[in-house]
Amino acid sequence: MTTLDLAHTVAEHLGTGWRAYTGKADDGSEAHLAGPNDQVLDLIDGTTTGRKTDQGRLIITGHLGFLRNHVPQDHKQDHKITVDQGKSPDMIAHEIRRRLLPNYEAALHAAWDEKHASDGIAAAREQLAATVAARLGVQRRDQATDFHFGTVDAGVHGRVCVRSGASDSVFTVRVPHDRVAEFARLLATFGHLT
Image 1: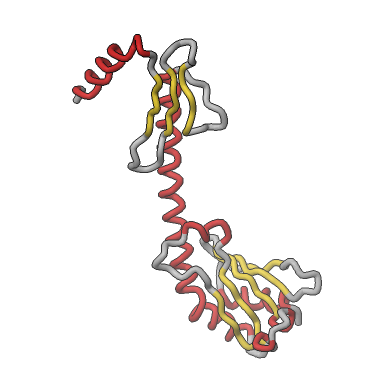
Image 2: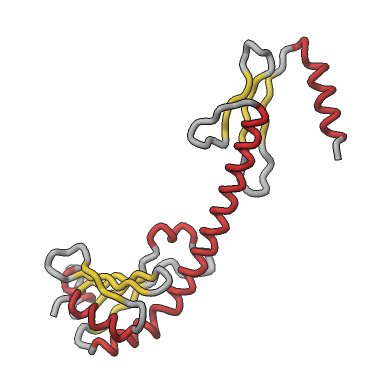
């Protein structure tokens, strides 16, 4: 029985929403299980690793993919178990549910929460940068959040860096000597606005 054949049977024992599909290896020694809520488990025949300790073992790893960067520090990053290949598919499914899924599901859910929060912060930053650019009459390239405004010929020019989250944005403004007093008055007025 190949790892893919075994994965199909294990998927049935894991229950609704689980399915098996082929892995990268042409010899059937790798397979994947896709489950509910974006769960993906990699199954590898331990005899293919070349390590003595993996012989006769099925290596099962919870796959985080791009979400790995969003897993909070209080969650495990690696989700891997090994199971005796001689165990029945229902026992392998039981071991997956008991030993792998609890921590893996918690990390996956927490990573999605962090990803959504991160996306919200990025969207707010992008919106603020678009608003600033529009008010300054600047055409941004590729939704840049760090851009130039004004021209040397016009006198007042500089750079804006719209930072993410609650960080202050940074304006670097260059003002010609003959307009410094006017610019200072403008800044003083701005500082008194409530």
